[in-house]
Picture (cartoon, one colour):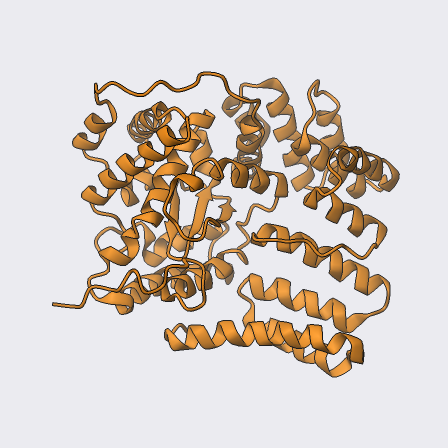
Length: 442
């Protein structure tokens, strides 16, 4: 019998001394280089804030869970070792309320806290590596352009294949994650009913589809549903809720998803009821297909504005050559929140300002800083430093060889005052690659 992995040996779920983190981070970087990546920072801000309601209720040592949003006609959400979470745009067709989203997040976070991936691996890290290699084969095919929907290849790589995929959870683990997730919600003063609504919606939707991916990777027998509808007395949940941007988070993902449809605007009309969120989604889709003037037309129909709508308005004004109007929108947001990362980095890019260093725990925040830094150093003629930040961006997208070539070019031409910073970047790349080689990740 194979030895059971020592799950307590590495308490920090996001440390390079933790084999699970190294494996998960490798594929996380690859997926962030996918053409299917949804890159709209307000959506990540919202998801981070929503997760922050759940994570304090867990016993995870590191409360940072990295997030990636992917555009796909597949409907799924999942986590991989090292506290990495993925959500596909199509699943937001099913999730129509914030309570349902919280139910989903609580369930997935429970898989992380209970270390189901590691525990299910019967042959320690070697078997886990084999499974992640299957996923990686799919990712590589997607990145090579094997399919217009980049995430389809991910599934072909084995993620949805229950027969071969050791990362597919058992029914007992699913029930364990359901129950632990409900405990989080109750402890946080949130309604656990969203999880019940979530299961009902998945089963209802599955009736009209040959295969629903979430149910393939998250087996849900009748006992799981009956567990959801327990008649036990529940603790009273405070009914008042603070205003939420859930509708705009959902609209963001569905705007990307609309691009996979033949009639995208009709699709958005069918999927989104809230008139403001619908116009925002149509505006975002218009921006994504390089129609900034049409995007502004939809945004002008709004009678409600928030960070989602203002960020899109700033992007659209910029794309339409109206930089002054874009800066005006950004500065209005910064008057309210001077340290807002996404708007301050956008302003830095527009004005070629050197961005202030920010404490960034999440990749989407780091991307904003790196992009602003690239633009600033290009504008000031400091090409080695621009290459340094370009290398960091490429490395975060799994383009390791390109990143290492760029950092060598930066080192060769850098001013003496910049060499130490570039050297630190190179050392970081080497640390990650050494950790991956130790785990035999190729």
